[in-house]
Length: 324
Image 1 (cartoon, one colour):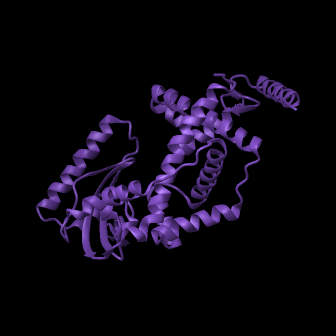
Image 2 (tube, rainbow, N blue to C red):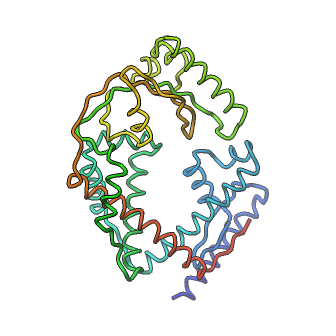
């Protein structure tokens, strides 16, 4: 069976090679860039994954910085190699995750966090993900859990004291019914790697903060400077449940009075200033209320840790060849 797969791989490589001969200079040719056991990774797959991971095309990255492009390409290729090895093992073991299992897992996330579907979609948008991308990642995570459960003899155990420690450390995150009304000024960075642009962005942000300290209206400055959501409406983002927000934002808001505004908040794609328009207090959830949610967080962290160790060992015993 393995011999047949190798023959098929050879035929595929030959077909790719002949296809490339028609236009040797074309970088867009779907040539092979790596061989992983009985599978191949093509240039098309690599370029698509680079765009998915960085949000930029390889051509764009290369034009901006040759070194950044080369480092990113190698890191993404390593990621693809690990994925191929993992997928091969999943197929070999006959592991299958159904759509219903994925849907149940998504519903459990919403239930544990007491989110509506709209809450989840908004949270994903804040992280730069679409709902479809989240579902695909959930499927990958479930397959990873099944793989680890199959491969690792001792099952992952989350002890009660770890759950208690996590709760104590993140106690301010567990509020039920609390909400905040927020406004935001967002300054977008077109090229996060450009130091000159970064300096100009920080200077603009400091100027806006100075104007706010002098008493200038937040909404007026948002209309004039913000490049983020609801800029035309004075940056008014609306009302959010406190537990819907990122931990960093929750921590910042704790120290703000109603009507106060934050310092410059560094984001992956720019800078942000947040104003706390109003706050409605809520009841803090007990450990019993959030035990399942904490368990899932800690369990996934252990799965990722075990998976990374396991995939490293598996890669050492796999055949890989990179072709650039």
